[in-house]
Every structure is written in structure tokens, then in C-alpha cells.
Length: 559
Image (cartoon, one colour):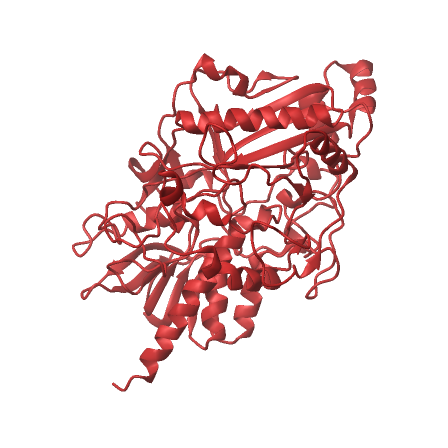
């Protein structure tokens, strides 16, 4: 048995920022991570000839940690949203949505280890959906409450971005100038211009010049396979080293937390975890910070049921696992007659925010954004072209490869996903993990509001490609007929009332006052396509600043 001031569970953006905030304030922090630490120069082997067949090198299996319930039937009314490719026909052959994956990384840094570095601030109006539009829920905080922490997070991870944003007020410029757009992205920008749409540099945590000991990006486009060059601002290279350097943080990897112990007086007393040798440990603390993501966080809370918390820890409202929001996305690809060199560049170096506001799309509530997606679609090497784009065989196939490689342009859209009662996380009643604990079970449903938004997103993607000069469509896929999510939110909603939320405005459980949650599970809304990592960082910094102040006050009060 050991003791710390604070135990943090999970080392993704929410856990890493919390560890940094509390350790710099002088509190003893134990940071528990279920996965291993990655060594970029050793693990991310983009130098190998077989780089294209190698995905992100997961060291711990993620597919065995969760299950999924049956998904909804497909309706011919929405056939234009079906996923397909020129080489394979329909990608989903059945009559129901298919479960592809919840794309999650177990390791120091979490899922940011294979992200494109997009670093977005939430649209202020997306934080007031219920008050202004009568749907979803409001955030119990304002954009202004996050602004200084957005700036701090941008400085620590090193964000390169444009000079101004009329919608999201800034107290200062981005730490680095924006990246120049690739040739393909410039052509997409020309298409947006013809449609009367804007096309701006995308803020990304990838160095556009040497920054904080990291080199500038080399534009290989393989962020999703892991960056061996140390140029992306992931938590394992930024927040966590700074937390460790403060001298008050102890990082323990491959330590899987099985449950949190609920003690008397509405306080969590300990975390029980298993190390990589299989030995079980108990660590106690004054405070516990949970940051495992919007699937694993509710799983841990529900698996921590006890006589003090019979329905699961922090589940007095019955909302742990509810309000699950997934990635609503659509990607369209087409061949351009001109060689685009679209296999190089940043995966998402430009963005259109024109439809990002909650009321920007006619007939639906909730916004969307648009950005280049050729590299995110993994159309960056000859094998994917050969399997997905180019037909024929032998000499004909070879000729077509020479004529098509680097010609594909893709546009991707990500949109708001409003909570609904049929999308949630619970515990699988049958499947257990190796420790005998119930796995998380993912339930997903897309109501008509989401499908109408998705229809708009698909139409705009196609229009941008056509206006950019792309001619022959070759592949489309999206959320309509498959669940494939990296960004997930909402399962431990933040709110002002204990009756309709899991944590309060300071990210603390309404009942268990020494329990905080600092990942995207606390988001009351998903935003209109914003990548969530920067908001997770900022919100964790804000919540832990307040926690540090409270802990400091307790230390100053005489016993």
C-alpha cells in the first residue's frame, strides 16, 4: 500500500495535463497508465520498406477491451450515404450498420499518439446548445473560462496556426506560424473559393519551425502510424516530461486499474491496480483524477460498484455511460486529372469553419467542418492505390498505377453528434476481461437529425471536389453504415445539477468530492467537428488549477 496527494488514472491529454498542473504546484502525483511507453525512434518504423502495411504499432490490444450491441438497420432512403469504393463496391454488405472500430491507443499519451495534431478551440455557441437551440445540454462554464488555458495548452504542445479567428477570441497569437498548405490542399482551397467557402490553415500541434527542442515537420503525412521524428506535440513529449521534471510526479506504466474503492464520508479511498507482472497493488490518495476516455472511464466507474455505491461509483444520477457521442464523419475521394502529389504534406493542413456554428446548416441543429482527408484516408502509398483505386491486372494495372498515383484528392467532414437515449456505454453482461471484469459495451444509434447533417456533409464534400477539378469519384465512406470513431464524448457529463450530470463545473463528482474526471467524457456537447484534444487539455488545466488551490488551502488550515 502506498499513498500520494493525487492519483491520476490515464496519461492521455486529460491525465497528462492534470499531472503537469498538480506536480508543478508541488503536490505528489502518481500517474497510472495501463499501456506502455512508446519510443518514437524505435517503435514508429517509417524507415522500413513495408511501412505502408504497418498500421500504428499497438503494444496492447484495444479490440478485446470492449464489445458492441447490435446497430441499426439501414434504410434505402439514405443510400447516397453508403460506403463504397470503385475497386470493392459497397464496403458494408449487410443490411445493418457495421462496427468497424473504436480507435483508441493504450500507452503513455493515449490516442494522441496516432492523431494528426489538430488543435481546435470549441465554438462558443456550441457550449450553449440547450439554452439557444433546445437540444442537448449546456456546458456549465463559458468559452471565456477556458481561454487562458487554451493559450497555455497551445504553448506547451506547440500549435502552429493562422493569425486570427473571428469566432474564437484569443488573448495572443499561436506559438508558431501556420504551415504552408500542400499543393493538393491549395487546389481544394480554389474549389472552396468557387463555392464561396473559406479555406484557412488548420491549427495543428506539429512544428512549423524548431520548437521546444523538437524539429519542424517533414510532411511525410504518416502521423497515424506514429511520428519517429519528435515533431508532434503529443503528451508523452510535452506535458508528461514537464510533469516529471517538476520532481513530484511518478509515472507507472502497464498498471491497469481494476476498480476504485468507495469509502465512508463520500470519499474515494484507494485505487486497486495490477502491474505488468500481475501483482495487485492498492494506492490511496487525497484526490483521484480519472482520465481514461469516454469508453473506459464509465467502464471503470461502473465496475467500481460497492455497498457505498451500488449502481457504480459517481452514478447517483444514473448517467454514467449515458449521453455517448461518437465521431459523425464522411469522406469522399476522387481522381484529379492533374498530378497532385497528394501522398505528402500534413494530413489536415487546411480547414473550412463556415458550417461549424450550431445553426449554420439549414434544417438541422449542429455544425460541421471540412478539411483535406487524402492522407487521413490512407491514400498515401502504392499498396492502397493498388487495392482501393486502380483496377485491372498485369500490364494494364501497372499503366493505371503510373497514371493515377498521387492524383486522388479527398475531402473529409466531421459534424456535431447530439446525445440520444439509444447511444450509451454499459457493461457487457457476458464478456469479461482477463481480470474477470465486465467489458465496456458500446451502443450507437444515429437519429434522423444526424443523418440529415451527414447528408449535408456528404453533399458539400462532393461539391468541393468537383469545384476543385476532380472528376471521377473513387471512394466514399462515413458514419451512416459503419461505426468508426476516434473522438468520443459525453458519458460522464459535466453540469450544474447533481440530478442531470455526473460531475460539476470543476469536473468533480457531485457526491464523491475527491474524485475528478478530466477527459472528453465530461463534454456536454461534441462541437461542430472540432478535434477535442485541445479542449481536454484546457479543461484539465482549469479543473486542476482549482484543485491545486483547494489542496493548498487545506494544507494551510491548522489541524
